[in-house]
Image (cartoon, rainbow, N blue to C red; front, side, top):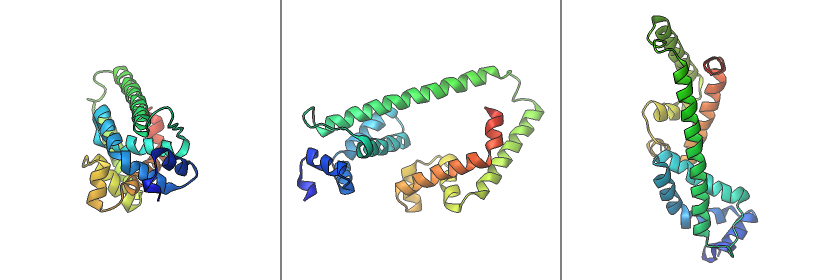
Length: 187
């Protein structure tokens, strides 16, 4: 039985295409990877996403060598590396946002014309949301209007977290497509 085998044997089974092996490794180490992600990122949703990313990386291109250390050490190193990458990405996005904000004249958002423009954009976003499939729209509204994490949405809607993530991603991609002219205009 695969669950009674060593981490190295389970990993070899995973590399051979046995997806049950991924479940076994997740069962063994998912909680510690999640807790490490949460501690490093400080955000439940980001930690969930990072945990999923670590195990998907393990599945698709992981290069674990049992002679170099334990599976736990390997996964924690991978988690740390990916968390650092995310921090760098978030920092770069924050810096871009700050540069963009500094480039605006101080009075730019206080004018009547800008307020009307903001209302128009808000209206366009609402229209675009209404064009999404119900599941996608519901997940996006719960995430962005209600501030719920993906796990909270999954629990509230009684659906797997993977489905919530898929609906969210597809919804955002469709919104981007529907609002392409606004995206290009603002950036």
